[in-house]
Every structure is written in structure tokens, then in C-alpha cells.
Image 1 (tube, rainbow, N blue to C red):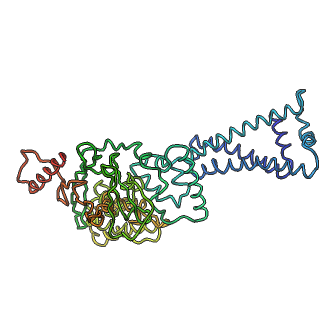
Image 2 (image 1 turned 90 degrees about the vertical axis):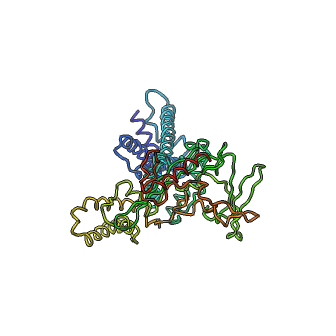
Image 3 (image 1 turned 180 degrees about the vertical axis):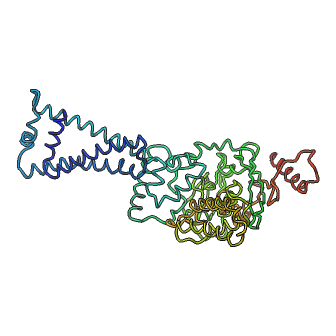
Length: 496
């Protein structure tokens, strides 16, 4: 059998074109098997090896298969012989075991054909599986996708595959994603892509087909306590506490308020925005009980128009649900709260924010500049105490570098504030895109922007975190009256 295979390969190598085709096909086949085995054993893990294995090698295999009949066709033209004459010239040595020449040849060709089909089918399946892995999405086009990959790995959805949100279910979604992916490959190859990558992503599947596979709106009910700690830029980095009772209800039943009222099945909110960027709202439509819509128009933008109408869904507010770029102040506040940056370092909040927001030309310069700035500040101002600061300072530098590395990507023009977060209204307009005095109906009545629609404020820049008081608690507590007031506000909000 081996000799028969060798003879057939030799016979198909009719000229240099046929020889090239046989060489490409055979080499690609065996390389694919070897590399795939090494990948399955965990010896080879690089994404670029995967690109070669699942895309380059099958392409070379197919090219080789095409070249073989091309070489045969050219041979016929150059010799003037018929196919049967050429077969007799090339394959007469295959006539073995008393069987006719044709049966042995056709049997071997049939076996090779089956092997080719299985190889191409298996290779295609492995290629599709490989292209659906987050590592492929994040690292195949390393320079372009590095910002998204960095934030994805440090997000609440780090264990959710990219395709769950960016592709969705069904053959149609898969085909659309591959067509879009082909254009992305062309854009990267010819350097046609924008820097930074523009948002929003208009090709995303509707949230009801993606987000709501896990997050069930009907189960959004009750209130949730949200505690935020902000640190002042004084020597002690003094903490200030804000506690909010978030009204996350779906807006169904007797309770008609709540944040998720906006996406309830019983309600529908439509809008149009400037250039369909979902930041500056031109108008908002609210569905009424009789099925009609009541329109609120932004009187500041009434002269502009946009034909793209969108129904409000999850990603209009949770626009950074996975690729979360931080505000520098909030980023440092969070790291101090988590104990990653010590308040034992004087002015650490101020200096850390200053270090990570410096104007550095490259990522490497930024990482080095952060270390230099923080080290020099404490060396020049607290030189006598440096011995006691070293451990905390080293950890603070490493933490600030990680914050910078995650959020800043000069090669893609991604800097602080490029991608605002519309959840709430701390890092962007958020809620106030619609809830503002300029969004008015025909009677000049504006959409309400009352804070208590979405949350009750239990503590606001307080020296102490919000706490529930017991009847026997010492009334000498300096914050007793404040906490008692906020507690009554919170309890009363539960009945609304």
C-alpha cells in the first residue's frame, strides 16, 4: 500500500506544477497533523501557531490539490497524448496482484479522496472552533485588539466567550460575523481601521438575544445597596462614603419605578441620536397605554435629524459591560479600597492619579514614568521615612502600572475618557442623555431628572459609611441623626 501511494504521488508529479501541487498538499497534510497533536498536548499554545495551523495549512493543501490537475492538463497539451495514454505511461507499475491497472489506481484515488474530504472537513471545523476562542479574538490582531483584550480579561464577563455577545446564535449570525471578520482582516492588512476603534458596535445582536440569555429582566426587583468610597487628595487621602439604594426593579406589578423599567416588556422607549452614536439624543419616544408614542425632543438639537431609530435596550446604559475603561480617580479609589494601595503613603491618592495621567509618548515610557514620579516624590519629600515606605511604595507603583497598562494604549489612541461609561452619570452623561431639562414634549414639559427616580441617597460624602441603627444605639454618636434620617429614607423607599 505504501509503495502504491508513492507511485501515485510520483505519477501525479507530471511536471514542476504537478510536483509543486503534490509537495504542497503532502507537506500541509502532515504538518497539520503534527502541529495539531502538539497543540492538543499543550506544547504549542501561541495564537499565531493556530493561525498557521487552521488557516494557512488548509489553504496550502487546497492550492496543492488545484495545481495537480492543472499540471496534468498542461502535460496533455504539451504532449498531445490522450488521458488513457498518459495513465498507461505513468501508472503501469501499479498493476499488481493480478488485478487490472484501473481498479488498483481508482481504489487508491478513492481512498485519497476520502482522506482529503475528512481532512478538509475536520480542518474547517477546527478552524471555526479556533476562531471562536477569546484568545483568537484578542490576540490574532494584537496591536488593534490589545485594548479590548486587556479590559476583557479584567471584566465581569472574562469567562464569557466573545462570540456570545458579538455573534449570537444561528447560522445567519455566524455568516454575518464571518463576513464582518473578513472585512476586519482586510482593514488590518491595509491599515484601514480607525484609531481608536469607534463605538458603539452597530453589528451587535439585540440584547434580548445575548444579554438576556443570562440576565432575566423579569427578575430585576427590589433595591440594592451600593457603597462608594472616594478618597480626598489630601495628605491622609481621607475617605468619604456615599451609599445609594439603587431601585433596580423591572417596573412591573404595583411598583412602576425602577431602573429596568426602561426595558420592561410592558414599556417601549425609542430614540434617535446624533450620527447614531447614542450620546446626544435628538428625541425620545415613550409608548403610552393606548399604543401611541409620546415624543420628547431635545430643543438644543432640534435642527438636526437622523433617520436611525433605535429601541432602548441593555447596552444603551451598560455600554461598557465587558470592555470597561476606568476613570483615573475612580480607578485609584478602587485600588485603595481593595488594599492594593496603602494610605500610609502621604498624598498617595493625589500622586497616584497624577502619575497615571501623565502625558507619556509610549506604553513603556508610561510604565517607567509612573515608577520614577512616585519614587522621586517620596524620596525628595519624605527621604527620612523611605525605609518604612519601601514595601508600600513598591506595591503602589506596581498597582498604578497595572491600571495604566489596562487603560492606556497609545498605538490605538486609547487614553483616559475616550470610551465613556453610560452606566449612571459619573464618567459620562449616562442617564442625563435623556433625563435633562432640554428634553421636552409639545407642552414644554421635560423628562424628569429627579435623582430619587433611580436611587435614594443614604449617605453622601460622609466621614463614615452608612449603617443601620438599632433602637438601643448610643445617641451620642455624632452621625446618629444623619444615619437615622437616611435609614428612614431607605426603609420608606422600599414601600414605593
